[in-house]
Amino acid sequence: MNLLIALVPAAALAAGNYLVAAQPACIACTAWLVAGPFVLALLLVAVLPRAAAPEAPRVVAAVPAAEAAEQGALALLAALQADGRLVDFLEEDLAPYGDEQVGGAARDIHDGCQRALRERVTLEPVLAGGEGEAVTVDAGFDPAMIRLTGKVIGSPPFRGVLRHAGWRVKTVTLPVRRGQDPHVIAPAEVEIS
Image (cartoon, rainbow, N blue to C red; front, side, top):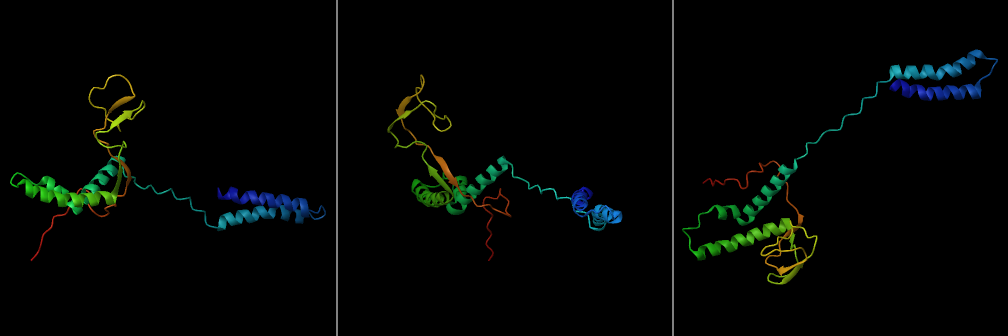
């Protein structure tokens, strides 16, 4: 490849020399002007180091979609645990506690989890309107976004009562937990005295 790269400009230079400077009276001069660029090209190819082959692009291991989704879910769960102690609450046996104790604990957990969620996820209702209001579901609706319940007969448009507006995520900002096992939601804490 390097030889071809050197010979193409040499051939062009030799042709130009022949057309411009060739004198029929001086055959040696003509031979030198035509052959000289080829000799120079061959010397350069022999002396100069060969051009290194371009490096193959480095393959960056992409995180499979399922693994990325799992890591995102675990990161959110870790945030809910860190700010609201949600996992502790859900894993606790509430039977020995009275309603007032559970209610008091739930308020703190609610505040912390709400803060954690709002810092990381922006939510919006799937359907506008308040619960109990009349709504119309037009033809072409997405069944993944709107679930019809009750006596669903016929074809859209359907008229009904909004029982839950649903939630849709607008944005998600989850920090990457580098250097941590994503399966560790909260490390064990040991107080040394």
